[in-house]
Length: 319
Ligand SMILES: Nc1ncnc2c1ncn2[C@@H]1O[C@H](COP(=O)(O)OP(=O)(O)OP(=O)(O)O)[C@@H](O)[C@H]1O
Image (cartoon, rainbow, N blue to C red):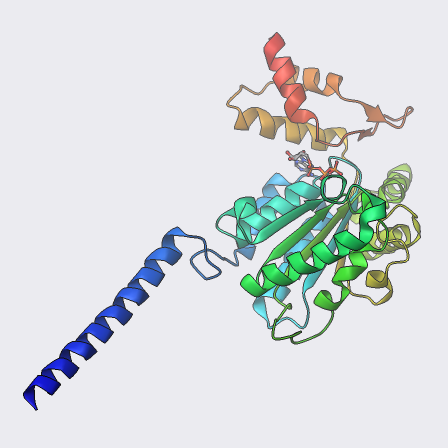
């Protein structure tokens, strides 16, 4: 008996030892190597709200709606993937907001291996290769969501994508519990484009001309403006897209053009982040470097806040 029991004892102690070791190794590995678990994923929607409220200027519709959509998606068992389409002129904050979302949902932010950025002119430059791109995008999405259901995909410059390419993601964002054993409902898709930007600007300017505050512009009014543009502008990337027809985009997010007062705030932020002093003289010098339109009122910055950082550097060089 004895030798057997000793052997069994040793074997079970060894087995326990190995499984404990494996568990410890697993948890140590998960602490140091990014994994799809609570060590690396977060749901900091309050932090997102705070950051957007203090650091995103002039975009009341974005702050209200984006945070709500993410909260709802994260709080309940979602019925489908969250799909948000960001629209607006250059430099109004579309990528900036994408970055904040990443920072508050992933400890590694944009560097997370669960956050995937596709830039149309870089990843999909040739319209003639659309069939290859479709296969690649399908495989990327499938592979990445299989590895981590909470993956986020950002498609930038959607208006420069070959028309029809985005429709490939249709089955992944529809109301399916799973497809071939993979649950796509926890993922997030962001589409970024300038589509509808001119229409958004025109509507914003209309309010200004009537002496109304831009904060009075309701989401309902702008949603209609944006969906009309997205569906009808031939170069929208979403032109007559099944994603719109089938109502698979949860939220259209309008980014309004940036006024001088908003650009001033961007200049202040940039000076602060670089440790420079802030003075009206410096702010005005930077403003002088930027272009404002339309010709008569000079209300809106032509490049939003996009060139602020570069212009601050130039002005600080000359001081
Ligand atoms: N609304 C804003 N509030 C504060 N800063 C902003 C805002 N919009 C833009 N910025 C600043 O300008 C930079 C460039 O903006 P961003 O890349 O988000 O523009 P975009 O809307 O994505 O433009 P594009 O259509 O050209 O890609 C940001 O990194 C940020 O520093």
